[in-house]
Structure formats: C-alpha cells, structure tokens
Length: 214
Image (tube, rainbow, N blue to C red):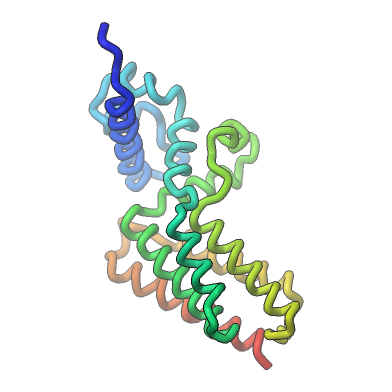
C-alpha cells in the first residue's frame, strides 16, 4: 500500500480542522463531538481518527492555530521601541490589539476564545491537551506585553495611577475577557462586530488615561 505523503497528511489534517471550526461556530463548544466533525468533514470515521484520536486533540490543534507569530512580535516591539511618549504608546498598543481582535474574531470566528473559556472552567480536561498546546497565543502575547509595558511605565513614574497596579491589570483582564465573550458571529453582522470591538477598546483607553494620568 503506497505511503501517504507528508503534504497530503497536512492537507487532510487541515480539512478536518476547517470542518471542526465550522461546527464550533454553529454549536456550543461543549456540545461538539467527534461525530459532528466526521459528518462535517465528509470523511469516514477511520479517516478522521487517523489524524485525531479524540475531540481534545482536535481542540488542541485549533488552539495552536492561534500560537504567537513572528510578525506580531515584530510589530508590537516596533511600537515599544519607538520615540513616542508613554501615553501615545499606550493608545497605539490598544489600537493594535483592537485591529488584531477584529481580524481574529471576525475573520476566523470566536472559536479560539470559546475553547480557552471551556478549558479554563475544566483544568483536568485542559491537562489532557496541555502537552500538545503551544505556550502562548497571539492575544496572550499582546496582553502580556501590554501589561508589562504598563507596569514598567508606572515604575518609571511616567504614569501616576490612582489605583494599585494589580487592580488596574485585573480590570484590563476582566474587560478584555468581556469583549471576547460578547462576540457572536451568528447574531451580529461583521460591521457591527468591528464597530463594537473598536468602540470598547477606545473606551478602555479613555478609562486607563483617567486612571493613569493626574
């Protein structure tokens, strides 16, 4: 029997993952099964299980599609290394995050964010995929760099916050989580989603400005 080429295997894996994404957009994540994916992919059960032995392996592969990319690092590092004053850098970083979220959430759907919410509620289940999941996603990287920048500028006295730094970071995390949880590809138009994300990031900047600059 001829050996399947590596390129053919990669294409088949991607077909399965694309089918899984379509299912995950239509159904609540916690209801998605391997049977759903087999039917959506239009393959035999054996054809799908050849590449993924269970649903968590499929989910782990979907999470990895959002792993941090080199161009994201380059673009965000360019903002940090620029000569702009601290407040303007803060605004530029938030606008970059806004643009990334618009592209990621609207063009790809909220699958990644729904998966992370699923696993955050079930640490034992997350342990099953942790070994195959890449360490950092694009959005996690952006969030971590943003918070590091904020703490650094506070320590340098470029910002004089009216709240403890830990409370500000907690507020940002809660606010960003709220944005991703609000996204619903099926119920709102693409333009409505774009407007919502952009508006909420602008509100976040105005709020942070009032807290950080006296």
